[in-house]
Image (cartoon, rainbow, N blue to C red; front, side):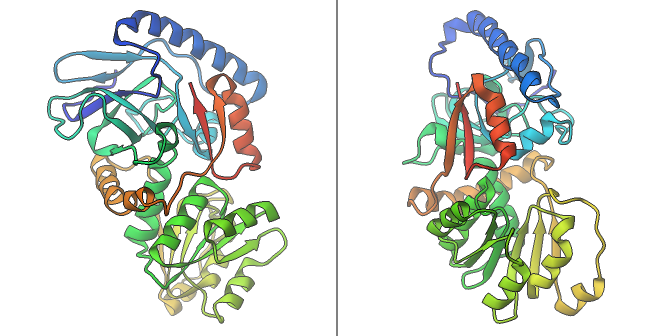
Length: 363
């Protein structure tokens, strides 16, 4: 059983149909629904690893009220749940075994030491797991008010990408106005958010993508230099566009495959931040290049950070990113909405890379 202390809160994941007096029916219905969804997944995705669990206690508040839930309700789909499904992205110890790293909904209960949030608040949250559940317990520090002007369901598309991009590109790599910034997968959830945020911050944005359609979309979002990685050498194009200097900051989701090319693409005092290893995890490094160009190389994930560290990032996001969203300078980019009964189709679309932006599952 996962025990949550006084500073946790619990909220229902965007299922307005359920009332407090329907808990028993809700539990039975939740198990039936989870059974149906998981039963279809092995036929469509032969690497599916999840198993249906019995009722899982996900929150123990200070007054002893135990909040029970089953899977599945709502998520903003990133590629990480597809990795977890394959057994390649296990949840941190003590976290929910269920998929889903961000969500949105209405607060249903709070711990007695939670002072900021109240029952009924419309919020979104950064999770370590459990976003597919009907209800979730989350540290109060990982919760954000749903941005005004953005629907509650679309608000679920923001927590993970905003925390990832802000913590890596801005907090740690210190991207500043007037600098140059390269992000791969410009049409991905992280890419579409990073383009908008970097432009809002005053940077010149370089992106890569694999089709004319995706590059055109990135251009419309504000990207300055759009590179088709299938037909162009991004290193040569970066050098051409910067007069041989290279870019100041690179956000890397590829890893080993692009590592040496990234060192060549960076300017003096350039910063490389690795957040993914889609192109491999093991590489070699020529330290002479790093030393001669005074490069900074960093890497970090988000899921395994401590609640205190996540809370610090969330507050930074609230102070620096949320104003851009409220002003309409950064908008949710949602490619398609799927009902939860079509979760397998959503995963297949994610793995096909035919989408642009986020994929959302709705109850």
